[in-house]
Image (cartoon, rainbow, N blue to C red; front, side, top):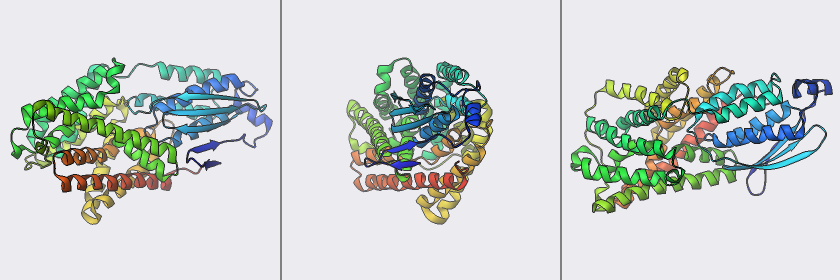
Amino acid sequence: MPFVGTAGTLVLRVGRSEESDVEQRAVAGLDGLPAGLDDLTAFLTRLTGLLLRSSGEGAHLVERAVADAARAYGGSASLLLVPEAAALAVTAADGSVRTVTVHGFPEVFRLDQVAALKPLLAEVGAGRVGLAEAERRLAAIEAAPPPYPWWLKFLGIVLFSLGFAPLMQPTWYEVGTTAVLAALAAAFAVTAGRLPRLALILPLVVAATVSVVTIELFADDPARGGPVLLMLPALFYFVPGDYLSAAAAELAAGLITTGAIRLVYAVFLLVQLYVGVLLGVLVTGTSTHALFDMAAEADLPRWALFLAWIVFTAGTLLAFAIPPRWFLPLLLLVYLTVGVQSACTKLVGEAGGTFLAAAVLAAAATLIARGTGRPPRLILLLPGFFTLTVGSLGMRGLTTLAGGYVIQGFDDLLKLVTVVTALAVGLVVGGALTSAPRR
């Protein structure tokens, strides 16, 4: 049973099942014997590392998957987790124990690996694959190259930003500006994949570059909207809205340490973006008062707003390495989320609309994800989640404060706290209502 220790870190201990020895041997290794401790430890170590690196939805899924895999091979597993590391203790059928420390930086940029891992774990849990074969397939998933070449990822980030642009300002000028700025941001993102040192400060560098170009070329007329609204779509790929919501969901679920650490990291990424924007202001010699947050008058037709979500979903597939066969269900979930949020916001306000939209999204994703051949829940959640735009509120609040617009800045930050909480609780509630009962 899971329990929460004094430090707030969730520890999951799973003992051996109460099956007979014959049944246990049948599921353990397909060879009549339980898996060896060293081989089982090596497999679970590799599995834990891959799960940590793809834990954008939260840490609780890591514990569940590792525990189920250990049980399938006649052993048990105990995990002590923080977002980027885990202490893994593996116990074999004869009671011998191995303990290892696993590191894996959490991200959501290689969701093709999440997609490939789901059917493997299903086969492991059902006892249809031996330990050696499972280890070989897991290693192949880790070593597999990205499914799209660099230029398609570049295109994906641009489309991702273009689809989001009308949500900031529904104007043709916003769309045209975003096309240029998103191309700059995408070029940095693709380059950072080959330069690890650049990846460490990528949000700062991208924000500073986008800020300079926006102020020098596009923010010359207040009637076209504030500079922050022109910058945000191009920076949206780097805004840590997923980390903020995953942190809030972990805190709501009682994972105090993992949630708190993830929250601090999300704030750190936001601060990098904020400082980058301020550096652009300093480099251009512009007053911080230019960072006003005022939208221009809308001139986009309704059909363009409708089609923007198609562009956005296509960009999400390419930017986050999602298999193209899942485009249609993701698009339907995006429209479902946007529709529920728009309708409910008119009835119960922004926080209520976000909560209900998140709950519906989580419930729908949980139900659709059932079955081995269907997309993993994380992939189904991601595009719909981005439509709720929690991260952009933090950026807007910080930059508006820097511009001297104190009331509006704090209003944006207050909205951020409210909307993040509503979104996280909605995801937890929607998932809890539709999750299959645990054995």
